[in-house]
Amino acid sequence: MDKNDTGRRSHYLTVQFSINDAPAGNELIAALGAATSGRPHHRIGDRYSDLNSLGRTEDNPAGV
Image (cartoon, rainbow, N blue to C red; front, side, top):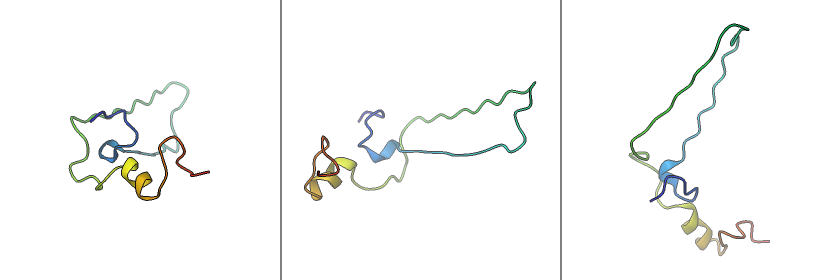
């Protein structure tokens, strides 16, 4: 499995956050994230099997 493969759900993770009063002119914000593997209880399946069940392909996911 390749963590850069967007069709695999075990490595999907999105985090959105905001800091209301920062950074000031003389401040810096650093945010770090790390992992040693995918999610321990990720969703079953992947995008490719979902597309197959819908009768679509990776090249044409909308089916148009």
